[in-house]
Image 1 (cartoon, rainbow, N blue to C red):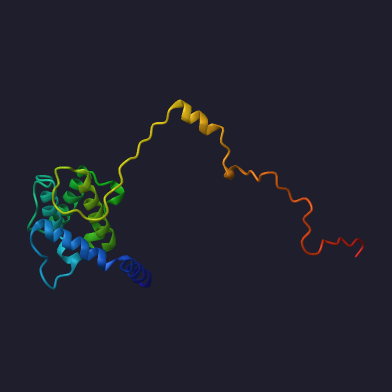
Image 2: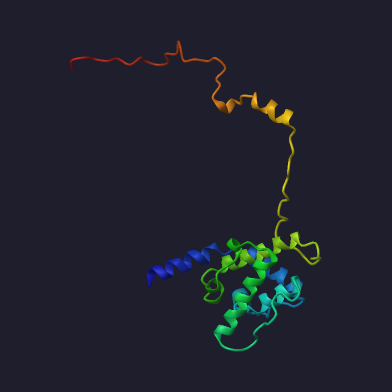
Amino acid sequence: MALERQVRAKLAGKRDPEQEKEAQEWIESILGKKFPPGELYEDVLKDGQVLCHLMNKISPGSVPKINTSGGQFKMMENINLFQKALKEYGVADVDVFQTVDLWEKKDIAQVTSTIFALGRTTYKHPEWTGPFLGPKPSDECKRDFSEEQLRAGQSVIGLQAGSNKGATQAGQSIGATRKILLGK
């Protein structure tokens, strides 16, 4: 039991209230409505409805059916539908949280990280004109070198190759020399 408490404390320590606030404001601005006052960020997101509505605003029709009632399995299905829509939209698998991270509040920092990953992915969709979240991902910087340029680069020996420009250690005797005493 003590170990589980330690793990929960460690995961809670990873949470960044500033990032969560930024993610919440981004979601609110897209959906056009505020989170209910007094409710915790993770509680509003827990049943997956807000996330599914968010996904449908960003990519219309990506979550065909959002469960608004039913037991925990229906609510967990919302989270799974959101995750599926995320991946189809272009968010990398490694950036997507596990269902239990949100449903059982095991790792809310990972949930926030996924929302930021979605925010970054919107930059890659020119049809998205809404607000963005997080820094713009870098574009590939492709370079084409001519054969001549490539050959010229082969003859250069960088200093990292170990060149010491003719310097040796000959003549260096700093401090006392080592005395070897035999027979002691």
